[in-house]
Image 1 (cartoon, rainbow, N blue to C red):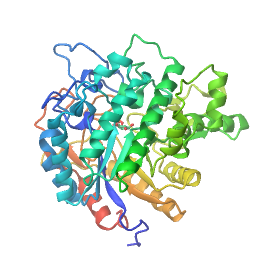
Image 2: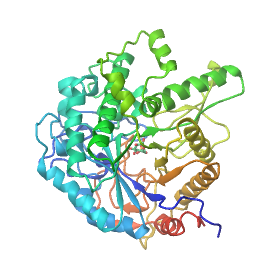
Image 3: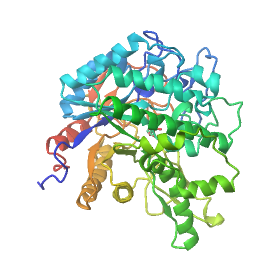
Length: 483
Ligand code: BG6
């Protein structure tokens, strides 16, 4: 077996998000969040937002896979695999049911106390996303979510209550999950929550690019304020960004394709990270704004807050890549993807959901990110959504998942050898949970199977897949044994 190339203390683990995992949507004082009014869907049928609940309609977040009542069992299983870190998120409406209360909901905070204590008892470091594709629905009604500047204030009350309460229990925080999805889908990374392809939590409002970028500006300021607050109050705490990263390759070496690739990379992959890491708006986005008549309303102090609130480490999700082409005749050959689809790459195969599998693209991405920012990096989502078959004896032979993860870890190794400072890896949906894009259960990512189905039935029993034993060995060997 080769030697491990990963650093001492490398954070091996797995990732989840509250609205796709916790369930208990109305328990212990929790308010309604956007995913709670979001129906199920499928690869071909979009999810819908129904501000009024529909009798007989399934709302997947309501029970999800009930981490709320299974957290001890789940964390023990993570510990059995050897997790050093567990990425999860806090559900905003569990802490502030409408987002507008003055004081946090004690029962909500107490739940996360129990979860973090349980992690620590198993020697697992929590890595906590403050906002992962959800917000209290009342804030959407009040100020169209992040379009309203007052959302910053509500968010800061929430974020401060977490940092204050969990000081000493949580060292690593992320502000907004995949913040850059907001460049394409309005409010996606924050208020909209999980409705890929949907036009807005308030469907009566049109998608105006100016609104989308204004909402992002408010998130940038909020994120930077969290960093400033954490640094001042809790010097041991580290705050990271979280971006969706998807390489946009030029389909050919035609210079027009090269330029298009660069501008798509700027807009989709770099813009938000440039603001969060470098602390100011880059020139290319200012040009885009002025050519498209977009004016961002800023308060006088905003530039300073952005400058001072730059993140301590860089995190991103990586699932797939796609191509771009300047030739209209070639643009029709599309591939799906994780929010950012594009032109199909003839060299890559795709998952059943149309996401192109590209391990080498992960090495390329890691190098690009490191060259640009020189910050410690964690890959906080990666994985293959696939249907699993439970055999008669209960076993699940998910070799396809092992193959996907192995090929990506091999490319992480190459990137580390290239000199990238990679400090952690948390594959997505380490336990089966609700799919964000489709609301399905059949699109599974887990090492741990959960008996829960698209129609809402199932016992919620947990069981170990083949990949569970494989990943345990990977962690035990510090990534050296991928066989
Ligand atoms: C990421 C999200 O975009 O992709 C997760 O941060 C999501 O919330 C994951 O679950 C996988 O996407 P999906 O649609 O297969 O669940």
